[in-house]
Image (tube, rainbow, N blue to C red):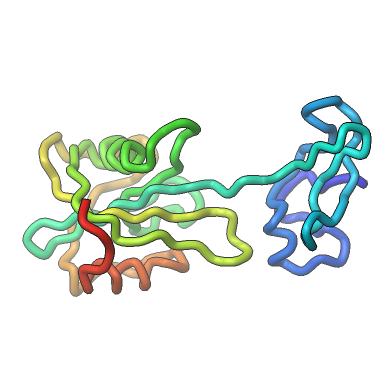
Length: 188
């Protein structure tokens, strides 16, 4: 069996959700023994499988940290300088690096994108959706220092009144805002 070379490629007759369960892959060979992978249903889910050594390849989701920061009813946002949603406003956010604590990634992303240091005050929530390989961990934060500036992957930094935010591009944005406004989550 040959796996597609990009996540947009169809995997036989599977539907979109099933395709997203295996969101890449260039993985054609077993990372343990080098044999060609085939596909096998493991607990009802088709997965890349090595019939030579028995290794099952699991494609882990990607975790992203998102930070909602406000001061005097003004919410800190960034105009994205990269895809997806190039040029649109969103919360400072980014992927968690391997072996990095999610909280550290949240602070790092705010610093990289805005030049500001923050203290995380509350875990707003964890957001995921069937068929999407990214899990969002959202924090509330307060600015503690730094010099505001646009980082290398944003076009500009802006502040918007919490009741007059620009349109936001991602599926979970409305729910994140509702949970944040309602004070949902857990204090840190």
